[in-house]
Amino acid sequence: MATIQKNEGKRGTTYRVIIRRKGYPNLSKTFPTKKDATNWAREHDREAKLSQACATDRGGRKTVSQAIERYVEDYTGRDPTKLTRLAWWKEEIGDVKLADLNPTLIADCLAKLARGKAQHRKGKEIVNLNRKRSGPTVNRYHGAISIVMEKARMECHWITENPAKKITRKKENKGIVRYLSDNERTALLEACKKSPWDRLYLLVILALSTGARQGELLNLRYSDIDLKKGEATLEDTKNNERRILPLLPIVVDEIRSLTRRLDSDLLFPSKKDPAKPYTFRSSWEIALEAAEIENFRFHDLRHSCASYLAMDGATLLEIADVLGHKTLAMVKRYSHLSSDHKRKVVEGTFKNRLG
Image (cartoon, rainbow, N blue to C red; front, side):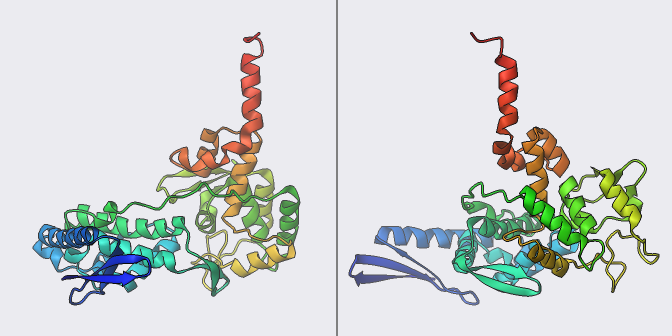
């Protein structure tokens, strides 16, 4: 039920809409005119009724938590952050029935998320940063609940429309590509060679030379590697496509120099559980500190690989192929690094054609 309150203040008259529904958190929003407030209240009421009417009898009894759990059961990806985002949604609106879920409620949750402090994981500790969450971060949470709702609609037939799709995503800037300078790369590789974990150096040169993702590398098995051909096969990637990684001679030599464990086929097995990959975060952070490198994530090794390729004249299509991207959109961020190569192409083409 919607209530409209008229408020007189120093900046003039405003109208606050308060929507109360049993079993759900109150929603409120302030408008400069009564007409805007009334229209918003009516739209919210229309969305609530439409969601209730569109849901099937079976889906109407299902909750957001059940939809998330169904999605997680079938999830075969290797992105732990997605599961973290879904856990946040369960905490916020897990008890809400799918029949009652509407764009307004999702948008209010995203607004609450945007007001919170950005966080950074340092080892096992979660550190709050002195800034609000960015637009891209909010978009990732938006995407997480949207894909769950799409599964509930398309596969489970619990709802007939996806309410998350009615919300506009926040604008994202191109961002800054962080890659290792020559001095940083030399210092990091030296620090990795001295790491107590004898496979950190191999992991880092693999990431730098192939551009593969952290999860893809940590799950590599000896059975995936052909040292004679100098290549590794990724059977299960983030894009669910098979991909071949070329292995440089230095990588092949490093793999051959390591003692293979008999209790695991993993290239980077955990010391405690040979069936799981090694948890290398502390070793990585120690190496970064020793190399005096700041503001650098392991994922930035992937950016470094792409940046080096761009600076040496590789095309966007070639970079996308190496990184395993399906489209060129994800690699356009590196295009400015290949300006010298593009200049040479243009000069060579028009050298004798103009003037």
